[in-house]
Image (cartoon, rainbow, N blue to C red; front, side, top):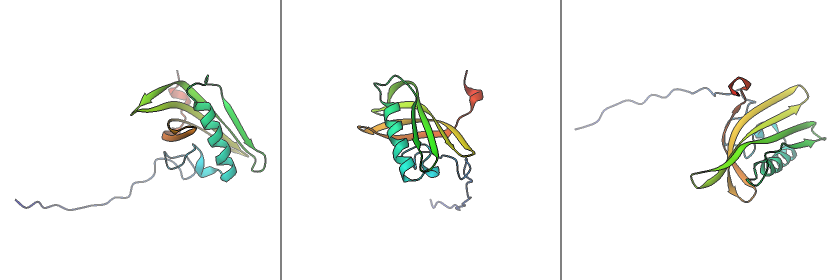
Length: 128
């Protein structure tokens, strides 16, 4: 029996603004908003903060040249998902009048390297 059908294509608008974080297309939560040195510093803070042996203390970073600073805080304990060690976090970014806070989850892909699984704007109303 022949199968007939048609194909329609609809553009899908992004769920976040162009300058917001989006998911795993960057190795760091605020990648699109950062220069190369900012990304390097944020990546180091993410790796330190999410270390499964860590105590969940906030790890801060700053780049005086760009005027950008941020912080990563692990939320809860590390857990295993699909055979990888994962951890939830809050990320903060500040530069001039720009202020962003995100919540997300990242999983270890190699020693010190984390891959973002989910990142979205932080909604304080959802926190107890």
